[in-house]
Image 1 (cartoon, helix red, strand yellow):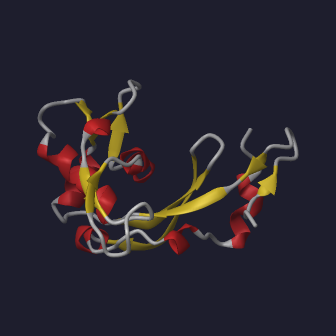
Image 2 (image 1 turned 90 degrees about the horizontal axis):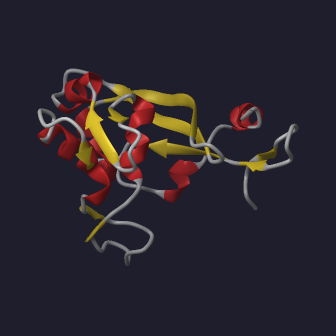
Length: 152
């Protein structure tokens, strides 16, 4: 059973997910950090090493994911408006260098990829790099269900 709510205005099913900052996302942020002096960078073409649902348990392979697009919800990256083009923000630089912390997770609604909330304790870059994707991390507190329905 999918968890979410029907919008009172349009009837569309709105689902929200929790996205935890993890090692896969950090590979994208590290790539943006490496290119911080070059301006906009086509991050969507970068291949990273990931363990995930498409792989056998424990298997790591080179792949492309959309995880780079979520970094903006923490304020770690910004996007040019051209598909897949991004650059690191000042907060992103400070985070990679260990001079800043960010919330562990973002709560995002699926209809417009809108940030609902930052969530959880503050984490360091080391903690983020050692966190691996787990599907159960996508669960969210029930208190946010009604907020997700106000997507208009």
